[in-house]
Amino acid sequence: MSAKITITPFKKVLIANRGEIALRVIRTLREMGIASVAVYSEADRNSLHVRMADEAVCIGAAPSSMSYLNIDAIVTAGKITGADAVHPGYGFLSENADFADAVTKAGMVFIGPTAQAISMLGVKSTAREIAVKGGVPITPGSDGVVGKNFREVAQKIGYPIMIKASLGGGGKGMRACFKEEDLERMMKTAQGEAKANFGDDRVYFEKLVLNPRHIEVQVAADNYGNAVAFAERDCSMQRRHQKLVEESPSPFVTPQVRKKLQDAAVKLVKAAKYRGVGTVEFLMAPNKDFYFMEVNTRLQVEHPVTEEVCGRDLVKMQIQIAQGEPLTLSQEEASVIRCHAVEHRINAEDSDHNFTPCPGTIEEWIPSGGLGVRVDSHMYTGYTIPSYYDSLIAKLILTAPDREKLLERSRRALGEFKIRGVKTTIPFHQKILNNADFVSGNTDTGLIERMLAAEAKDESKK
Image 1 (tube, rainbow, N blue to C red):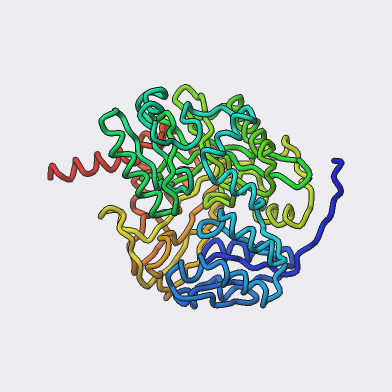
Image 2 (tube, rainbow, N blue to C red):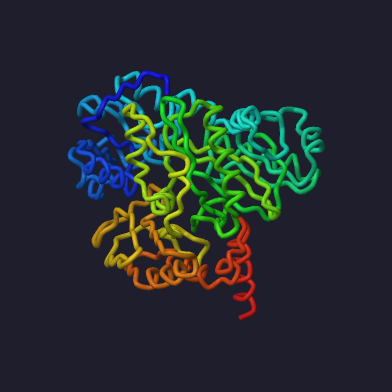
């Protein structure tokens, strides 16, 4: 390690987010002896993260465009409270290069990668180019964004293809195209969705891998060229590209494939000169070949799964790296698998009626407990869930010595999690745990859609 080490401890950190993740960051800050500043919209005045923080600043009206996406308001809140740094959480501005730049220009530290790294890796077509230079396998696809020659590009790749927005994520601006006659229509749909959600209608093409698994690798990289990768998370249980269940280690990945995944992830972050904590996402084919998909330049919703498996606080690691501390963790230590872990995302949604959001007041809140149970949430009895934001209300994280015991613990914990006043996805998670393919570990990104289709078919027969 030849670079000079400069460590600047933080005294106060502003969390540019809300709810569960803001509360999660506050708890680590408190353990580290660092003061916390919460920001909140008018709709979040009674949120638990506001109550738990050392200071709190209202930054605007309920709509996120007037509060949690308001860069000027958040930066001003940091200045007036004397914050040394800003933690972006996930969602909202967490992968916004302009926000990272504005924080830095205001004299604060952005707890995450540089604005340049966010810009490079945030554009998926550019991230693919970096992956190629780093020797990381990618799916066949277009050479950057597609233009007027999109038909020729698609023919060269070969159908089926996936049309993807160059910016953004969360399944927005993505369309699968199986034949040439549908290409123009699918292109226009993907471009329109990309423009509406990310302000940019550029798209690129990738070869569509059929029946894939969604496998991701958590990475950490410091300012001195050191990087490590942790054991993979299997995030194949998705509905419309939105994850519902994540587990680690994957029941499909062998130790040999795991090492290849970790090596590829480290190569990529080093090629991008990345610093901080992030996630490299891959698609894995049924034959266990894998292909780079994208990089999330932030903390993932499912980061607790990796924390339980590796036994380390990833938020603390983010903060330490941002303070200038070098990684003291070796790749061998990062690869240790202490247990099996799973996360069930509990959303305020009615899974019996197309997962319709169900904002409202929590009349009773009794979270699960006991050995191997962790609940990350900002809910409490009497709290009113606002209609303006994401419907995630809790993350139920379970650990056990092996996967069989883990599934038993999941059934027990979901059964004792009592929420009255709003509909939740707990009943759907219980259905997942009774699905033979999931229980056997035979999952792919289409399993939940097949479950729902089978359920709808059964209902139509009644």
